[in-house]
Length: 422
Image (cartoon, rainbow, N blue to C red; front, side, top):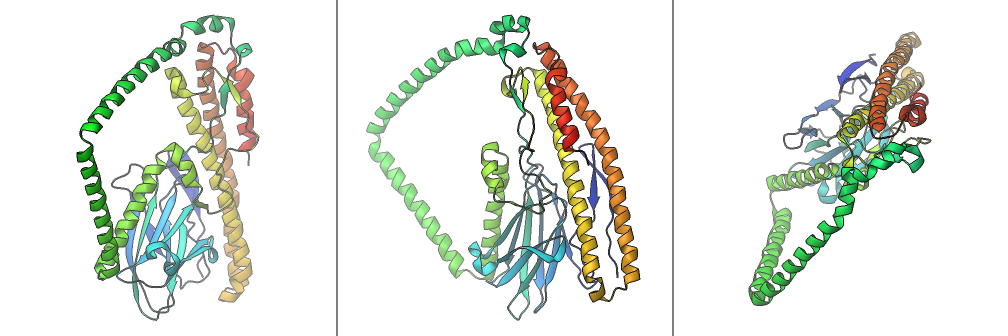
């Protein structure tokens, strides 16, 4: 019997994160999962991609796991049969191969393509089988979007009059932002006049060329309708290779759509709701009890350069701390599940109590080492977080928020100290 549960460090954005070889585990040595290693996407910066073709032998179950994604990436797994419509069943699992999180079938999926949408801190495991008594070729395509770091939101609110020094109140009328506010209405007036002139010209041109525009419009509609009809016909009547190519094209379109929308802050929020967190240890919203802190510049779009740089470092520290806690909480949950699983099923797999107890001690040692590593890294990160808050203090002070850290910044530091304490 061989049960590997180890942990170590990897560096990402100057962050040492705790990491387990956390593909779904088992005491059954016969299970040999196939790895899908994500690599950099050729088209989308920071997104990742993997693809593979496999054969499911008659009466067997195939096991796979995805590796190489970040906890802030949103992962799409697409599974479809090659060259034919086959009744494939895919089970998304969590921690162990027997812990099924979600099940989908090609027969019930749009265009015969299974799609799992997940967010996970560890390797993502899934298994595939079929009711058909024959070998089935199938394809797996995996896309991990660029990391999305927006769910923590901004803790800053506009400072009130009493928060600002007297000198700053006097100077506010001379700041570029206030000058801009005084002149914005003139810009809007000019734009409005220009738009009115353009509209009048468009009406005249439309009246002259109404017939030609109608012809072009209906020609465009006919071309689009004809193309659509051909696509449907090809899908229904195509040979095996054409079916496979059609499904690949549909998956490619879906991946393009996800990667483009994840880059849009407005669209990402609705899209993200479709993704399942593998584990309650993964955060997906601002932490409860987070304080709101006054700032001279609550929205960075109109701020001085010092705010942009300081806020960037501040947000980077926040997400690094968040990632550290997610990995610690999820790792602890994983190790506890490993112990519970081993205690429950070791006897059924012919593993003697003595052997299992030895493995159990190894897991318990990993948990102690995990605690020490977390405490050490958390201390380093909190020191960096404090330095970033002091950079914000310098910027706030330069714009009239005297003693910003002592009055407001320290509240957020104390909140983070409690939030990320083990």
